[in-house]
Length: 74
Length: 264
Image 1 (cartoon, chains in turn purple, brown):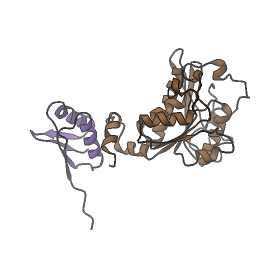
Image 2: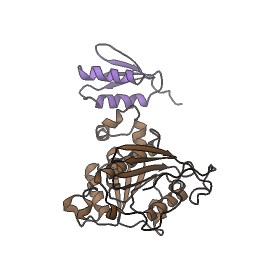
Image 3: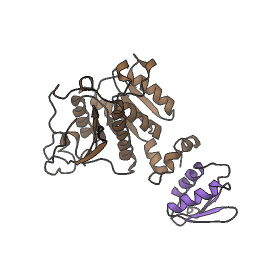
Image 4: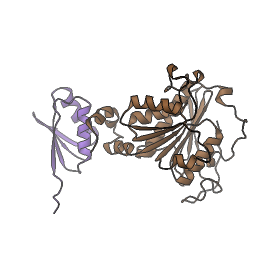
């Protein structure tokens, strides 16, 4: 019996600089299905600004709290 | 995803492009290109294919590096004068990207070895400097069904055309009449500016990447001509010829004859 793909994934990208953090986020999203959630931990500053912006530009749904960025794959 | 950390970093500036993807990068990595000629077109074409992360690349050239080559063949440096171009290209491309398997073929592509050299390639990039070789590469790619990027440069002028055999116009469809030997001057006689080879060779790498990855729209059924003196690009539509001896027997029926663009 095969189990369905997990509906959510987590990525800890603290310490990973731009644009490598977006590269990893993007590849993770590419491997997921529409509607699945990705939770990403990012450093404050440029990473917390540019990764959500890039994700929005590619049409994903993005929200964030103090800890993580939540991306719903389009 | 099986891209390594080093690959992610090396290719990060293309992996962030909206048009690109991990899948495109993996398609490129699983592909093998054959570059015919390591000269004015072949140096930039091979450089950008290797830099972008092609999996394997063969470089066919039987010449040795001469001082008069250096102004237009940037893989060959002054200390390399006298070295075999195919082998020197392998060394320099290996410095650029050791993830890529580079295979040197210090041979001249001819009737007898063309099929053996090109078999197994996913794309052929024709950077040769003679019409006879160009038609031979085209005809061999048509019979083997291998996508091909053709180009030529002379003086300040160049052109480029992508070919999907059986689907789009082949080189012989676009240029059905092979010019008699000696009727078009060579680089040796007419001269060529190095940078024009850089422009057209880079376009060949771009076209090969598009053919291999499915990213973008290759220059199929279109000849791009670039007049360097005015920086004026011209795109001329071309199409398959029903009577083309190279590709008329391939899968899709060819439409009627089309206009012939200016040649180089």
